[in-house]
Image (cartoon, rainbow, N blue to C red; front, side, top):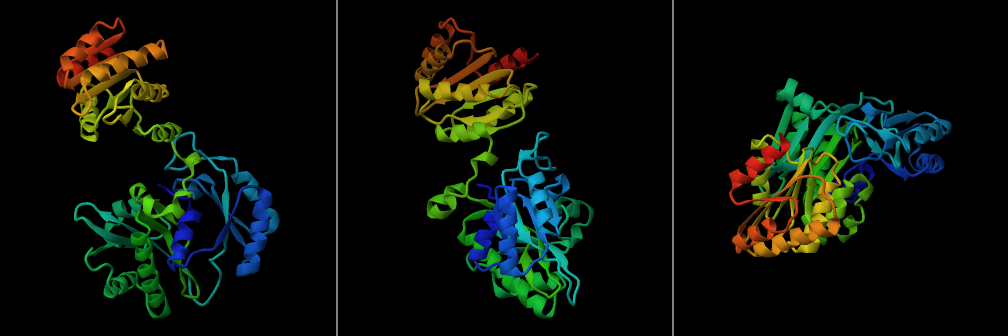
Length: 396
C-alpha cells in the first residue's frame, strides 16, 4: 500500500525520525490557514507547497512550489490543487491532485551550507536481508546516480537476527562525510528510520532528500513509503491511510470482488487460476506475439458469478483484443468452470472480442464438450501450444 508524503512522515515522526513539518490542505483557503498555523508553530516565513500524489518527480511536473507570502500560498495552492500532474512516474494523462502539503522552509541560512543525501530502506531479495541504501547525491534520481556514478551509492545490509547495530549507523554517517553534531544526528536518524521500517512492516522507506540543515540538524524532507498489505492486520491504524483515488479503479473493484488483478499495458486479457499458471500464461501470450493486458487470478472458486465479474473487469480495458482463459481443474472441476463461462457469456450478451478457453484437469473432456456445444463464439483448446496458436491467429 503506497502512502502520500504527509502520511509517510506521520509514521516516521511517530518513531522519532526528524521530519520537515507540514499541514495538509484540500483547498487554497485551507492552505492559507495551514501556512499561518505552521508559522506560529515553527517560525517559518516561507512555505513549500507540495502536491500529494503517489508518484515521484513532482517538482519536475510543477507540483512543488516555494511561496514567500500568504498571497503566494493561496495562489500557488490554487494552481496545484485540481491539476493533472504529469511526472516521469505517471501516465501521459498524469494524476489529479486532490490535496497539497504546506511545509516549512528548512533551507534557512546558518553557519554551514545545507547538504542533501539519499537514503532508503528495503529488502535485498538476492540475500534475503534488509538493507540501507544511501548516497551523498541527494535530491537527484537515484537511477541516474547508479548509472553515471555508481561508486557514490553505498549499501549496508542488516543481519535479521541482530537488527541494525550501532556501528552500522555510525558507518553510514561516516560514509556520508559527516562529523561533529551532524554525525551524531545522522546516527540517530538512521537508527530511528530502520526502527520505523521494521515495526511498521514496510516494504520501502525512501527519503530523498535527507537534509543536513545549516545548523547541522538531520531531517527527512520527503518520504516515499510503501507498506506491506499482508501485514495491515497488525496495523489497523494504518489501513485508513489508503487513498483509493490514487489507485487503479479496476484493481480496486477487483479487490472488492475478491479477485487478484493487476492492470498491464497489453492487448490480450488473461483469466487464470493460480499465480504460477498466470505467470506462465503471460509468457505464453508473449511467445504468441501478443502482450498480456492484465494479471487476473480468479482463485479456486471459478463459478458463473466470479467468471462474469472477471470478464467485465477485463473488458473495461479498451486495448483488449482477445481473452485467454487458462484454468487448471484441481480444486475446482473444469466442467463447472466451463458452465460458468457459458452462463457468464449469456448474461453479458455480446462480447466483441475472441475468447480462447483452455481447461485442463478434472472433467476437462466434459468441459470441452460444454464449450464446443454452447453455440457461443468461444474457441476451446487442450494443449498450451494449441492455445498459443489460437491467440496468435486471432491477433494476426
